[in-house]
Image (tube, rainbow, N blue to C red; front, side, top):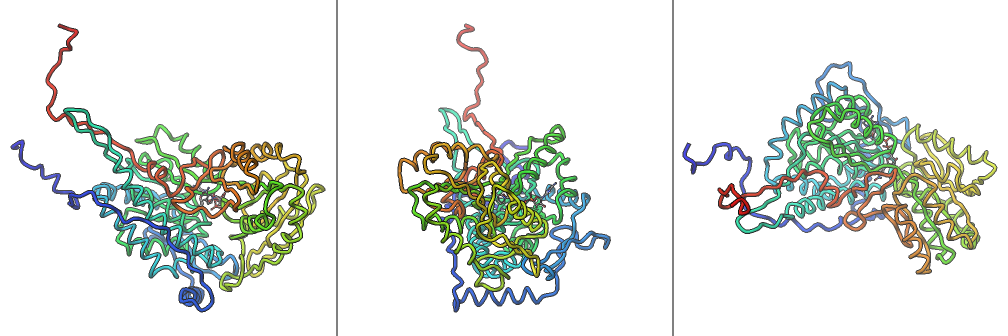
Length: 557
Ligand code: NAD
């Protein structure tokens, strides 16, 4: 072939556009208020009613819907009305998972071969569909399926998910622009390749945004992903899958494999094509996955990237100088929004005695006054916990506190399981700072408080740092600058997200990149440049503009 002719392979590229474009500048999606009489409230209420009246759905995700009827089906119910079945979901078998992996790996070259702008446009369109025509649907599915109030659904399923999609496109573009220097006679380039294989995205029940982010972040970087959502999050996961399809995501880029994880991991973790795990969930499951990867390490074509955001035992530290009203707000909102089922929720507090004496009456009154009920009644502050397992774990912890000689229930303490799994926001005051309330992640509306003598401020810092294995979020409340500086310094490794005079929850994409270290994860900060960098395997290219011919060196003369 003539050296100057164009190789036909280059014509197989799916799209051609010679430009370095500027992606739309992302802004955080506004959170709507759903006040009585607002148009968004009317739309949402109609959607809730329509979903609740519908016959139970049948969800198969991306696995073949026409496979044998012997499939195992799992029920998905409303946490606040547990007899109300929203649908049933097919359990992915190891053979289904293997078929899904084959499918996405077959799609991988085409997806990676598509230019960045064409890939990015799919996710920008998905963001606009969520913010616009699908807002009520995704919110309603998240409310009914995951037991969220409208405020909690709106900040998660809409605002944060839209932010993840829009900002991740911008971060990916920033990464592409990082290019090496070139010395005279050469042109150096960085090629941001996707990983060689597939990413296994395993997502938790408590955030629709995280469920959407874990498979889409790698996909924006050109990867294909197998997405295993929590069974209890399946309703919103399915709505999101439909939105991605409408946005133009080609078939086989993200395969949703529903059901419990063990059967799916059986296929995924032994597959030589496993190139990454993007996980959010409990520390126990993450460690189990990592362990399996270690056991199978010689099988893989490439070392899998492992990114995991896991549990927390998040603290609020109250200095004697703190503003009492701000303390009550930080504790109540930080511990009890979404019934404490946020990885960042305050679950242990260390309160100076002088402040405790001033706030305890108000704290108890506000906590006991929080309304709790069905998510379809928008007047409630919170709702049921996610499932029976969570309910049993939390009710057992409350009974243990009642029986403990070192603990006293100062607010809440009641639970009931009709018509849903309800646990009243509960505050336990404990005189034993090493008891389970300060170390165990219960993942519910349970706040344990240690009241320390004002003079022990210094030693309480060490106590916080050493009591729990986690290091996700924490907050200090103080009006004394030197105390703020001391806490910020001494608790440097105790939290990946640290708050001063605020609650330890509510991180916003691009404002407080989120994640923690120690037992709380790999701290790759979901929705950030650092996270997106984990999904690319850069290739360095050097091109000599005039090919060198010399062989001998001067010293050889
Ligand atoms: P979980 O660990 O029980 O489940 C997480 C996911 O893992 C689910 O999809 C589950 O089905 C799956 N899973 C379980 N065993 C598996 C296996 N062997 N193979 C593959 N998948 C498997 O967690 P959860 O109850 O859904 O969520 C709550 C936990 O998540 C809490 O510990 C919370 O702190 C944590 N969390 C952390 C963050 C963070 O950013 N750090 C955010 C949200 C939730």
